[in-house]
Image 1: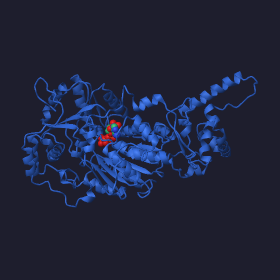
Image 2: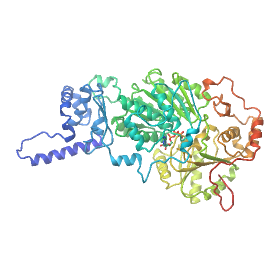
Image 3: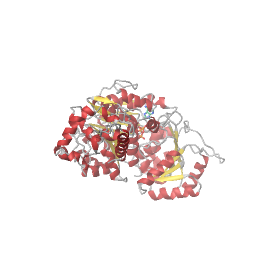
Image 4: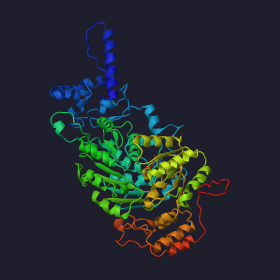
Length: 626
Ligand SMILES: Nc1ncnc2c1ncn2[C@@H]1O[C@H](COP(=O)(O)OP(=O)(O)OP(=O)(O)O)[C@@H](O)[C@H]1O
């Protein structure tokens, strides 16, 4: 029995005792708690069906007493749950009409074909949305500039939705959007809403920090709030009259890291507030029993890492038979060599409806051509949406590349950190876990408040590190690639690529931890000969985002184009982005644009370096790092 249900039962028990003592006529009356009184009629049929099934009255059958039995009434009264056992839904989350005095956790319910909203909960609202004094997230001065980014839609004629209105969005969703402080949709949201609402599959590519999460949550939740839950299929348990042990989510969001799953779950909690939809998250490294308990309390919109999901499917706790929406967040990462087998297992090897029966949505800031080709296996006649160039960086981020030999990196880093203003958070990326630990120790010994996050730390340590960083108690976090994608931490003002990645897309995601939601940010990269493999692609990115391009980088790019040092932006079969046009690979011809002669680059980079925006933090030494 879950703690809160136990609390309710205890509470009901103690009230019963008091009433019995004060009863004048001393007649033993069965106590009916206030929240159950109006449901009494409804529950009669359920009680009789429960009585006919001894298992439903067994200790395993649910959460005990008349409260649990009442829950079965929804299955029995011909409402839209249509046979859905719905154990634990309202029993855990309350009846949704505001009369649940102890357990108002901000959930509503779907009843008799109606969306019955849960009662407002001021404390939960503050937790989810922040307050006027302490907002959760603020958009930056450049938020409106998102509208100037060119948008390309291929595969459909789509009219953008330029405002948050009903239609097309559900009115309750609009209330939650307002509570979140969103006034205007970002470009990716303007297009993803009509595309998904029209029933199409989608591959969406938009810059880091430009609101892709809400881009898939809004159309999915709007539809869920309008249409209610799907009936659950009959499984072995329910055929035998038992409460089904399986959860049947209708939306599955897959993401590559635990932290990203938690973050998506937190976003989902905001937009599901007071609705019938129960968001749920499962990821490795955390106690699986606690996650099973969470699943038992309702799991309609599931955020998951692939490994833990496979485990729960194998244990018979999650079925994908009801999936209407499959979302691959950071889709290019989810389909690269590391994750592809697991994704295939989940999508093709379990009980998920086929590609024709579900809607599949893929989102990322980067989409290499070869991954686009692979992604076709999971999509049907999809729309390709690109906001800005595929894989481009945001102009909200001022980028600087400096030449630093490996042995000089530490002292360069200290110089930079000494010049930073005290407010704001700094994220430092390194290539290895050992380096992350070593550099963190070095910074701590140098009296900088640093913490670290990498794959060798336990989940608890990773969560603690993030919490210290988010709260600003450790204003510096040293990270491996595990923190490069998706993490949305307000107030990250600086990203330092202490070690540059070997893949330019990783660079795009890493620096995208700053300059989010229209805010500005600074990114600096330490470059030396070891990184010449990405010199050309780096130049192209800098040029696209109107950033300063140092002459050593141009020389290095030229050098690597003569040798075999560089893969080039199109090396993996073409990136489908960049100034060579092609975004949706279906539109580009098969020939990969050659990066060959670089004379055009040479001439443009021979011009005096341009410096766009961004503060210069000059230390006493007079050197500007940004
Ligand atoms: N319409 C909006 N108005 C204001 N803020 C928004 C809006 N949409 C999203 N945001 C905020 O913008 C921030 C970035 O959004 P999100 O994390 O979804 O970006 P993203 O595009 O997924 O980035 P990444 O590529 O790094 O994963 C979040 O803090 C989110 O709350």
